[in-house]
Structures are given as structure tokens and as C-alpha cells.
Amino acid sequence: MLAPHTDDGEFGCGGTMARLVEGGTEVRYVAFSIATRSLPDGFPPDTLAREVREATTELGIPEDRLTVHDFDVRTFPEHRQDILETLVALWEEWKPDVVFQPSLHDVHQDHKTIAEEGLRAFKRTTILGYEIPWNNFDFAYQWYVALEKKHIEKKVSALEKYASQHHRRYANPEYVWNVARTHGINVNREYAEVFQVYRVIV
Image 1 (cartoon, rainbow, N blue to C red):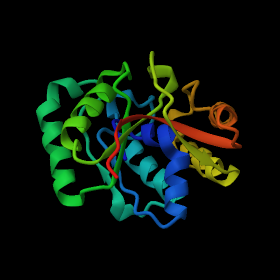
Image 2: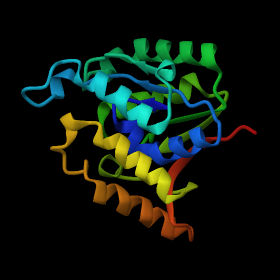
Image 3: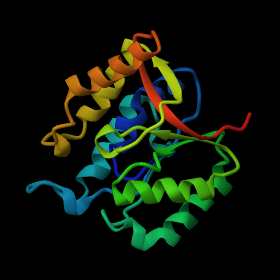
């Protein structure tokens, strides 16, 4: 799972990660920035590095399957080659069966860079783009993962670990529940997360 910034992964596919971990799947979480320059006043520079450890633990991901880089927030396009080389190294080391990453339609420059370079680095495996609703001007609702209440509870609990981000309007448990409920209703399930399909290899 590729997260441009800590917490993107939880928003995009936190419930899916919780379900996969529950089923015995090895889930790895790679964050590319701890967004030090975006922290509110009063928070130490390493705040998000600590919060992402707590959040992924809540989802059941062991700390040795968490990797946190510190590319400077909002500058990813300037570091495109370094990011690609990092992603290629991940492919060579892990050879994952499925990669979850941002959508190509995500308008945030950092998210879009990870999406574009992720397609290049992981073109030999299944790639699914997760939804960040407030950043996606377009999104194809193609692959649904049905979730239960316990999976959304873990997603919400993980997001609550990001105390430094509670000021953001989308960092709202009710919003998270409503998005999951809406996607579930669309496919006659209780809850769901949705993904855009870029490549499926069976």
C-alpha cells in the first residue's frame, strides 16, 4: 500500500487493509512523507512518523512492515526520479501480488506523482487506485471491497491516532462511516471501499 503522506492510506483503503490483515494476508504500508511543514503549531517534527506507527498498529500491521520516507511535502514532482527508484527497489525486494495506490485523477501533486510512478514501477502486478474523494475530480468505481462494521471501526480508530490532523474537515468519523456506507449501499452490502482498476494479473 502506497501512501504519499501518512494517513492517505487509511483514508483510501483502511478498511480493506483491516480485512486483509484479518484474513492472514501480509500487508505492507509505505508512506513517502511525514509532512513536517504541514504540521500545526505546537507539534514536534516527528509527530506524523509516530502517529502512522500507532495507526497502522491499530489496523494490525506490524511495525516491521511499515516504511516511512521523508520526501518534502508538496515537492514530489521535483523528486520524481528518486521516488521511482524507491518504488522499483520495493518491487525488487517484495514483488507484491497487489499494489494499492492513489488514483491518477488525484489532483494533489504529491498523490499524482506516486500514482504515475507507481504504475511504472509495479506494471508487472495488479494495481488498484484508491479514492480520496476531496482530491478526485474523476474516479471510476470499478472494484468494490465489501466490509463489515468491525473493519470500519478499525479504520476510524486508526485515523483517530492522527491527533495532528483532527483540524481537517474530512478527518471526521461520521464522514468516514458515511462514505463506507454509501459505497456499501451501491453494491448491496453493509459497507465497502472502492477502487479504480489499472491492471489485474491473475
